[in-house]
Length: 459
Ligand code: ARG
Image (cartoon, rainbow, N blue to C red):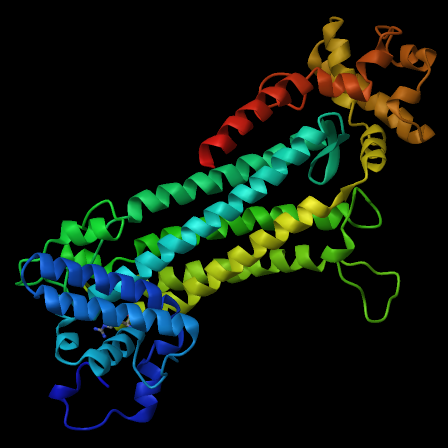
């Protein structure tokens, strides 16, 4: 059944129907469509626009449709244009006359705006939970690795020593921002468009604030044209999802590097790695690579929707139907990636000796050696030059700074004394960095306590 056949004298061309139809994908929000209709009808009856008998008949019919779709006894018939047409036609078939009143005081334009918002809101809450699960795993790894030394990198070159807890803490901050970004988006999007009609409101005495409240919104949207034409919340959401993927992708890149034969900082659990069809020795980080790869796909959704929206005059245009498949794909992708990533991280083994060994070899304590000279009265620029020479000397001899004899130190600068060994020791280098945000244990303990409070606040 068509919702709009009356004005037409010819059947729609089959190809046109196929091209125009959205039921193959918008059936994803059949529950939200029905919940929205139930709230709308409840409001219509409260306002005296429908009788209570009509309301009850419609709501019972809609609830039956919902249950039957869920149980599988009612199959969504792909010959309808969209999920809205399917539900309405089915309702009329089963309850007769009252069913024809369901669409009083609304248009598919405000209906689809509502359905998509309700669906997005549900997805956003699920993704928020998945982020929380990841934060809980990160916090655990942090707590367990306050003394696990590893090199910190810049330019992928060993720079200064840090701890594994500190490194994980950087990701904790990223995913914490992602979590709060979703909450911001939720607050901004949580206004109900239903009752805006096609674009100019309706002549019925609707109580939009009431419908909004029934559906858990903070209130009705305030401009009916904007209500049916607004997809900002999807663009914000896709942007939030893109940032989550960017963070996951950076993390995956590190895990791939750490898992390589050269680094061996981590070993992926067998359940989270894959083999090669030809090379028997291989244990590949496919999951990390796929998450990194899927980032492009989520960015693509964001760019697609921005581009779709950029030239649209007010108010509704059919172009906006294109918002769905790409947003659904992005939501499903992010949910899949977050779940798998958390599983991979929580089962991954850290090779603590390899990390510490790497931190010891690679002059990560060179800055501390320069700081030692500064603390003994040498200007920092001069100290930098002296340690540069010292590093060159060590490279030449194939040794670490700590391996030099006191005579060798003194030959480079007479300022060095026996306490240089303590000053360039890995533990000292990390433990001296105790201002908030640094890798020192006291600083990290403060952050871990704050994280604990934060995790409690989002439970
Ligand atoms: N399937 C449409 C969409 O997703 C529903 C709204 C149809 N409205 C219209 N005026 N054709 O946007």
